[in-house]
Length: 254
Image (tube, rainbow, N blue to C red):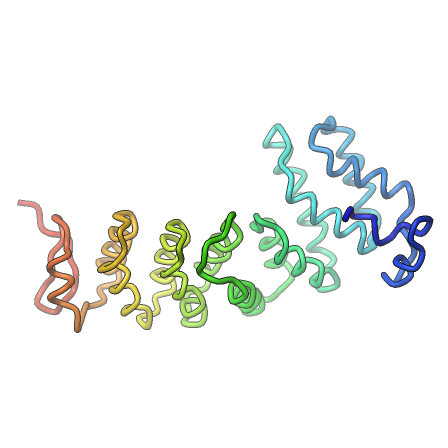
């Protein structure tokens, strides 16, 4: 279903009324098509950006959020347009949060949407939103796990137990990159409550990238492998040792 299918008064007046407002003008429809046309000349699309931003309707806002799903050349122009739109949308404050949340649940790549939300919500509010969104996802196969991976990465900015707990279950994700990013985030959260699942991951995962990330994380944090010394010591690759306290260290060079 297209962006205007629910709003065209001429074709579906009942749907437009149910949406709580008048159908968008033909001018808005024309400018939205230009806004989302990645093959349009930058100067022409820039005029459409300005025109759609001037309209504060839900339809216009939905179109502006959809702009983050397309990539245009050159990349400098693409980033400039997206940054401008993100700033303009964030300035509207909490009024657009419902639509931002809807887009966060629908779009595959969400880094720009997270950036908008971060400019609207207080820090704890953003963390809670990211945890809520991640909680709606599972650790099974996804055709495109990009949204999940970006949520895991975004929570690295919140070094607390709540973020670490939300991410810890993705240490068992079927996607290797999701597991790798989960390792990075939980170590960044500095929550020792994740020590046990991290040790389990090191002992059982077949990815050397992940094993090395876990080892380096334990070296950096200084967390001991209490209760798993024998198994960990057997699995340690060259370059790592366990000290008397059960802390993983880099082996001193000879």
